[in-house]
Each structure stands twice: as structure tokens, then as C-alpha cells.
Length: 261
Image 1: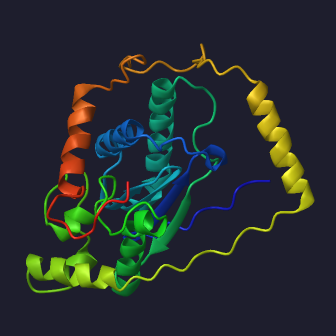
Image 2: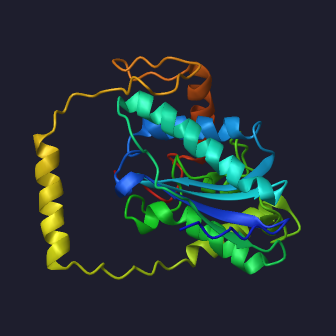
């Protein structure tokens, strides 16, 4: 059955959600999220676009993107998914699918400022809603880019944010207050029938019987770099991109929002 075509109106921004395969926690480690930040930076040269919102969680990511040409969004997301999957599989010493079959994309009209700000706040609130943080600051979310008005090297301020006040500092203060009004609405627990429980036991049993040695597929496409799996190293250029982003957005000693872990 063919996939339904995406709604890609010109000039719109898109809220992107991309999940790890089977919703496994494949990007829980900071080094793997560093790789994702580098891939997002490299994507700027592949398909022209503006990246307004970023939040990397343990098993999924959120992006707020506006492509210069909306019809190029599938090409952009295909490259991000393909390149990041190869890099992360190489780093983790694994093979097979890394991301789910298809990403979610919600179009937001450029004049719908209320919805745009609500979406941006929702993206930035993900770590807090998951119980990972007590506040909005997170080294893998660009909330600090909006709150501190610092350049993180990857993202830009959304025009809806810039219309919140006459000055940048005023925009920052109003957005902080807007975020403090956020209230998380927990999703209902998924129904678990007897068949689901039985399938879960079968999957766990089969996994425990597998060899735990890490393997790399011999047919995997070659990348223009080599990771040292023993040292968990990534290219220095990629490391510097991640360091700049984390310094701009991460928690600092003077922040009121403290880290839980």
C-alpha cells in the first residue's frame, strides 16, 4: 500500500519527530547525541533550511525546521536519517535499522505565532516532562539559545520569538515566562493485552540468547572517517560542534533549574 503524500506548503515550518527503531534507547549516551548535533550542522550544506528548535532525547528527537523549499523536506530528512544511522551504527558497533520507518512532520503556518510558540515550548519542555530535568535547560536542547541569546552554531531564533517584544532581551524574558506557564499533560497508559505480554516475554528470551558481541555489517556503506570503537572517539570537528552547542545551552552554576542526574 503506497504512503500518503505529505502536506508540504511553501513557507511553513515543520515540527519533526524521529524515533529510534522499536523505540529503543539508542541515543541515551551523550557521545551519540554529539554525533547527531554534528550531523544536523552538516545538513545545513546539503539542503538549505533554517533550524529553529532542537531537542535530543534518549530514544527520539524533536526538530523545528523551515526548508527554503518545502518540497525538499523529504530529501533533507532522508539525508539526516541515512547519514546519522550509518555514523551511529558505526559508533555503537551495531547493524540494521536505527530509525523508525518514517518520521512525523506537522506543518505550521508562518502567521500562526501562537501555535509556533506552543510547539517550540513543547520541544524545549521534553526533558522536564520526561523527568530528566527539573527545568528547561538541557545540553541537548536549544532552550538556552533562546533564554541566554547565545549562538550555539546550529540553530536560529524563530521569527515568532522575535515578535514577542521590541528588543531581544525582552523577547528572551517573555519567552522564559511563557515557558514557566507550561503544564505537562501525561499521556494515558497503553493497553496491554495477554498477547502483548506473551510477545514481550518471547522477545526478551530471544534477546538473552543472542551473542552480546558487537558486530559491524560487512556490507555497510563506507563513511569518510573511521571511529576508534575502543576509545569511543569521534572526529575532532564533530566534537567541537557538540561542545559549542552544549556550552550555549547546558546547565550552569547560576541557573535556577537544577539537574536531576
